[in-house]
Image (cartoon, rainbow, N blue to C red):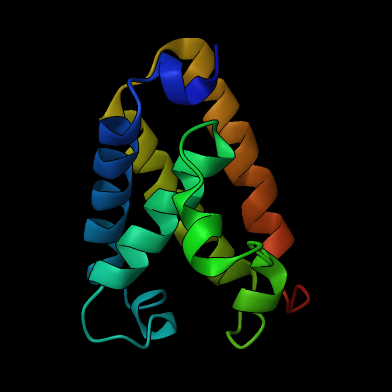
Length: 124
């Protein structure tokens, strides 16, 4: 059984992403990285990516092609501060979504790795 199925499918990821972006909306470090006035499109893209990554429908790739995460994030400065703020909000969102202990660990392990992989500016 996939993590997508174990956590209850798309509703879990919708709640996770909504909580995450509620934090980003008021974050002075992260909000400037989202050029769209409305965070709605970013919410949908992240939700669809996570749904697909964890074993759900392939809506993300159907609409956007290969994720190419490093390429899509390259235009934005992502240094230690941005990575840390992103992780703060994502960890908060995972805890708010309330997955089981094994699922929580799996999600956080992935998010830690992904956040570091997106960092494109060296440590100061």
